[in-house]
Amino acid sequence: MKKQNNTYNIYYDEESDFLEIFIGDPKECYTEEIEPGIFVRKEEKSGQINSLGILSFKNRAQMLNDILKKIDLKLPINID
Image (cartoon, rainbow, N blue to C red; front, side):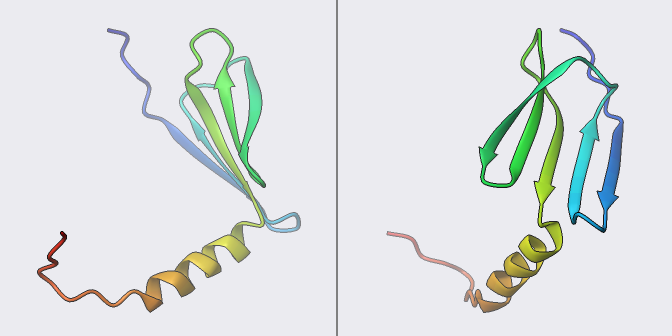
């Protein structure tokens, strides 16, 4: 099994509100939009993800924070 490089680099462009997280060393990749404004860059040969990009990052983070604040769980939870 090939050893994975667990190096991460984070780039944020405040003007365009774009966050990109790079995983491992730069490689030749192609970009795929997996959701509107959410992009993954995959290595050409292996298909492994090399980076994740998020447009409107601050807005998305605030929306997630608002959702998480509304969750009120009582533990333990019984699931039928």
